[in-house]
Image (tube, rainbow, N blue to C red; front, side, top):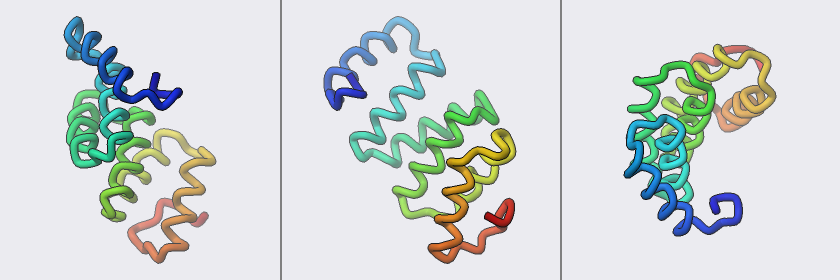
Length: 115
């Protein structure tokens, strides 16, 4: 449903799944994605930070944190999680492109490498 853009249906299915298992990291990650799709970036960040504490260094979580903090216009925090993502997934094209973006936009926040 999320791929098809049917966010309300995806949310209903997720609600049922969470009733069965409310601690599944995969389900909580889907919930964070739905919050992001609904432009509730603060809610997504809050959930992702909890997931990141429970499951540190998971690229899927770190990547979503970068994107959510960019939407919240907090480039320092986005860069911090981008650096963490780059450490666990070195050479990843997505991270290199994001670093270039931050440099282009004027970020000088302790860049992990020269893009």
